[in-house]
Length: 575
Picture (cartoon, rainbow, N blue to C red):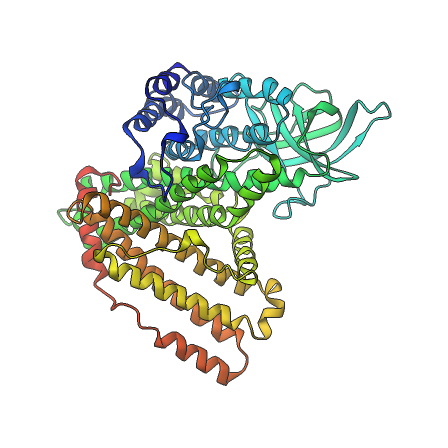
């Protein structure tokens, strides 16, 4: 832990010293970049060699990596100093998670441990629980896991069949049930387990050594094979009453809010994996020749790389923006009730980041395999493994379908309260160079406003049962959030550095805004066409959509060719 501790003591590295107004990756100081460097060194010197040997539970190299991560301080980024951590917040935790995104299966084990395996104690634990568990989890002596999913309670995670009954003496809860697909199952020393009691869902701290705790065989998975995934079996397990985590009957507060935070952490990991896939793709395309010409010299390949970079820029802008806003909001928290309220306020943002980043990653690893051609299908090339590993991210932490429903329903609640656009989502065009970009953003909001008007019709009464419409509404809101985040990042950079220094950011946000507008327009047409049965009403509203005067569409091919020039030279994502 000394490496990061040294950085903090020398530089007064604390959240209170930073400005959170629309945080961007460029806002990290050199001090924070040293944490990034420490993480990269760990990845290069410790993780990569173990990945090459093949991670497995049997040869204990996963546990060795956890111990090393604990030694250098990477497991305690969000843990308070009193329990051996550094309390640096979600922006720095996001930076570490992003870099660890290139760590293959270990990235999954790592992020589960530092996220859902540790944060429940940080936010909901008693003082005694924090003192007992957090130092061990932070040092890597113990590994944590989170047990919510059951065979009949996947997306419907709160429909638990696991039960707990208080014994006659009132000293212990007797827990029975099975939890399925638990990451770190065979590694973990303690689990946060959710079960039902008379008062409702409740969270329990279950130690591996408790009598009646056992773990089923490792699952045979499509990907992430170096991480442990198995069933946690609980047979008359005695849980001391002091091991209830949070309030009795309010375990759903822990489950839902910890999952919100986990979705954001997963977004950062996806971004890191995407950057690694882009690097492998460009490096290969520069060396591989066809028709006496390097692949990267063909404009169709260049367009693929540009699309990868643009998707990463949008996801990166949105994730760091969200992390900065969450850090700022959580600074003033002084009660569990306030924590639950604040984290719930970020439900839409976290879900958007999870959906957008996982689908961006899927697109990017798919194109990475395509650029590699037949070699991309061979296991000796890393992109084959990235392709298989990436698929789980659209299922992890709530499927993308469940997250889209959450986004849409959250948006409907805002509409009911007259809060369609919150204060934080209002932006001003302070930079003339971005006039065109902002034009698309403003017109996109008008399109969504028209869709909201359509909800006043017959559909509005049953909208929560009409999932296709909710999906469209969520996708429109997702695109808008990415457009807005990219613009805020670019505007901030232009104000600081000027147009000549930030041309690539301008190009990327230009592509995101124009293509985002087109996507929202298409979704709005689909929504209105289906939502209004009356032809006259439908015709008028479609005419209203077509009448919106957006900026003139431009040559995306030329812009994307400009975007990739520095990327080709360095074979790295860069802005």
